[in-house]
Image 1 (cartoon, rainbow, N blue to C red):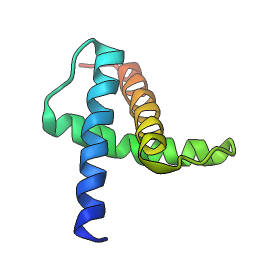
Image 2: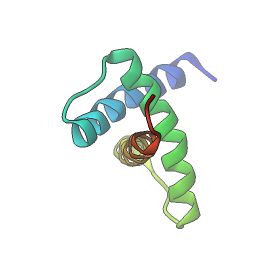
Image 3: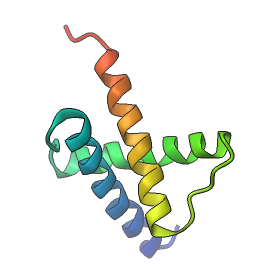
Image 4: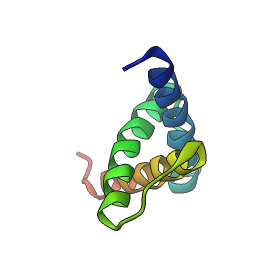
Length: 83
């Protein structure tokens, strides 16, 4: 993976994680957690979009897919009971 691709993945992941945090919890969780949630969400969203026949094209499409995936990830994490 080229350094530009990695930086773009981290940037989109950070923005998507922050957006998902604001939409699900009402606030972001911090830059590192936002990036991790966003990057995992990007993979999850891309996979789910592919299953239903949609393909995220371009920067905006990638951001939308990553945000949707991150929202789903945070919603699933809320279902896990905390001890």
